[in-house]
Image 1 (spheres, helix red, strand yellow):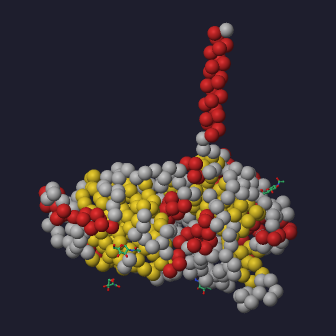
Image 2 (cartoon, protein in one colour):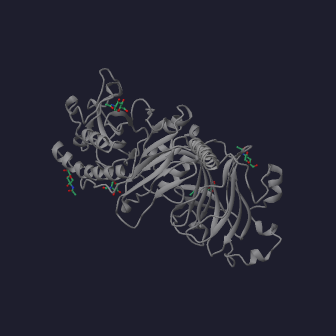
Image 3 (cartoon, protein in one colour):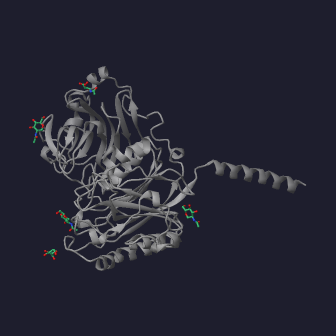
Length: 517
Ligand SMILES: *[C@@H]1O[C@H](CO)[C@@H](O)[C@H](O)[C@H]1NC(C)=O
Ligand SMILES: *[C@@H]1O[C@H](CO)[C@@H](O)[C@H](O)[C@H]1NC(C)=O
Ligand SMILES: *[C@@H]1O[C@H](CO)[C@@H](O)[C@H](O)[C@H]1NC(C)=O
Ligand SMILES: *[C@@H]1O[C@H](CO)[C@@H](O)[C@H](O)[C@H]1NC(C)=O
Ligand SMILES: *[C@@H]1O[C@H](CO)[C@@H](O)[C@H](O)[C@H]1NC(C)=O
C-alpha cells in the first residue's frame, strides 16, 4: 500500500513536471548554410542555358549534400544565401541564361519536383523542390528569376520582362509556397526593382508568421520593418551576400541587432568568401545567438539551432528594470552636472586615475572629427579609465558612462553621427557609438578593427529622433554580446553592458531615420 502511494505521489510529481514542461518554450530546429559559392569566373560573358545550368549544378550539388546532413540532425527548415547558386557581377544580358522562370503567386502552390513540365526554364526550381521533399524540410534559396510583363504594364523594361533577385520558399514536400523579389538592390545591374513592394508571409506546421527579405533590405523600412510592424512576423528568413564593414556593419552585427531590436528570430545565411570580406551567418533568437564568422578558411558551414516558436516567450531583455552602475535617473538637468565637456578627469576625485591612464603622456583633443564608414563622426576620446563623456551631432546627443575592467594601452572614443549616409547607398542615420580606434591617434578612430584587449563596462544612451534603433555589441575576434538591458527611458534610448566575456570593439546604438531618406 505504502509502495503504491509512493508511486502515485511520484506519478503526480511527474505529471506536474511534464505539464510544466508543456508550458515552457516550444522549439523548432532550423539550419542556415554559409556557402562558399563557386563563382562564375567571367560573369559578363554570354553563356548558353545548358552551360549555365551545368555551372549552377555545381553549387546545387553542395546544397544537396547539406540538406542531407541537416536532415540527419533534425532540421525542419534550411536557409541558403543570396547569390549562392549563380554568383554575382552579371549584366542584365549576361545573367539571362542563369534565370529560371518563377511563376507569379496566383499560379502557386506548385510542386516543381512532381510536376516538372508545368513550366519551361524551371530546372533550378525543380532541383530545389526535390531537395526539400527529399530532406522533408522547408527550404529557402535565392536565384535569378525572369517574369514576363503583363500586357499594358507601363513600367515594363524595354526587353519585355522583369529580372528579379528572388528568394523561393519550398514546403517540406517540395511545394513552392512563396517567392520574394528583393526590393533594395545593392548595385545589381542585372536586376529590376519590383514595381510593387513584396510582403511575403507564410506559416509552417511547426511555427507561424515567417517573413523573408534579402541582404541590403535589412537597412530599409520596406519591406523589413513593415513585415514585423504591420504583419506581425516573428521569424525572419534572411539570405544575404554581405561584405563586412567594421566597426558598425559586420554581417553578424546587423543580424544580431535586427533580432534584438524587434525581439524576433532571424535565420541568416551569408556567402563565404574571405577575399570579398564575406562571412557571417547565424540563427538568432531574442536571447541567444548561434553564429559563424571565419576569415581563416574557405569552407562552408552548416549552423543548426533550436529556435523558440514564440520568440517573445524567451524574452526578458528590454523588459527588466535596468541594473545600472551609474545614476540611471539621469535627466537633462543632472546630466549637465555630470558632464564637463568630455573631460571626465577633472570631475574624477581619484586624480591618479588620470595620471595613471593607459593613454597617459598623450595630449588628446577634447573632441575631433573622424571618418567612420564614410561618415563624418564627431568623437570624444575616453581618456581615463572610468568616467563619463558626451558628444553631440546636430540634435543628437550621445552619452557614455564607462569603466575599464581590464586596462590596456588602447584608444577608445565615443562618436556621434546624425545625417545622410551617401556612399554605397543613401540612407539617414543617427548613431551613438563607442569604438576602439585603429591606433593611438585620434584620426584612427573609425578604422576597421577586429581585435581588442580592454574589457569595458558601458552604459550608452542618446536622445534619438527616430524610434528605430539597432543595439550593436561587438567584441574582440568579431564575437557578439547582448546588452544586459536596452530600451527607452523618456526621450533617451539606452544600452547597458557589464562584464563582457571579451574586450570591446564596438558598442553602438545604430539608429535608422527612415523618414529622412
Ligand atoms: C569575359 O567575357 C567577355 C565577353 O565574352 C570577354 O570580352 C572577356 O575577354 C572575358 N574575360 C575574361 C577574363 O575571360
Ligand atoms: C565583382 O565586382 C566588384 C566591383 O567591380 C569586384 O570588386 C569584385 O571582385 C567582383 N567579384 C567577382 C567575384 O568577380
Ligand atoms: C505539401 O505542402 C503544402 C504546403 O505546406 C500543403 O499545402 C500540401 O497539402 C502538401 N501536400 C501533400 C501531398 O502533403
Ligand atoms: C566634418 O564635420 C565638421 C563639423 O560639421 C566639419 O567642420 C568638417 O569640415 C567635416 N569634414 C568633412 C571631411 O566633411
Ligand atoms: C538632444 O539634447 C540636446 C542637448 O540637450 C538638445 O539640444 C537637442 O535638441 C536634443 N534633441 C532632441 C531631438 O530632443
